[in-house]
Image 1 (cartoon, rainbow, N blue to C red):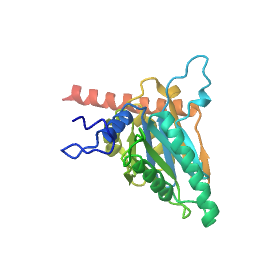
Image 2 (cartoon, rainbow, N blue to C red):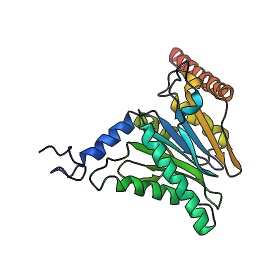
Image 3 (cartoon, helix red, strand yellow):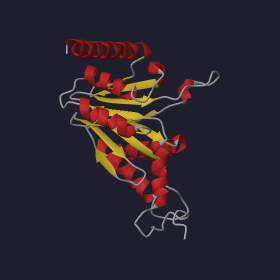
Length: 247
């Protein structure tokens, strides 16, 4: 029996193959990174190169859900658009019902619940995306969450999704610190994306969210960060070479 033909049938070893195939679509998507700092949250994404006649503004990887909540995705872009529209409506429903802004965990729980529903009944397929949801709660605390096609979600201090996410996550584990400031968090996001992006600043997009609002550093600012990173790498290589020569 082909257990990957139907979404609702488990294989004898407990797998739902359609969900696992959706996770494979995520692993083939472009990379996204989230870093939670002391007073800011950073989202960094790998952008695909726009064609010569294409309007780059229509190639969005980061979407705004509410005043201070943003989402980035890896996987099937069309699936992300549908999920973003549903999440935006839920944010407005929350404001109308409770008369207060939704928390980051509230909208993360909603998105994860929608993804889970699409794994439990026939006639549909799972969403082929993972998401990083970032923002500030009403108490001004920065938050970073991740959801998967299976409908599970976790809170993180720093994480990555998409292609080579394991390599980027290991890099973040080595270099992340609890008290990381905004400038250092931006540098860490760029540095981690350079592990998978070979074309430099033109294919990197950064979003900085603080309790006072958000901003998107332009390509010039990202290039200056890359120059600092390259200078640090050259200095480190020089130190290693001098140690070898002295020994």
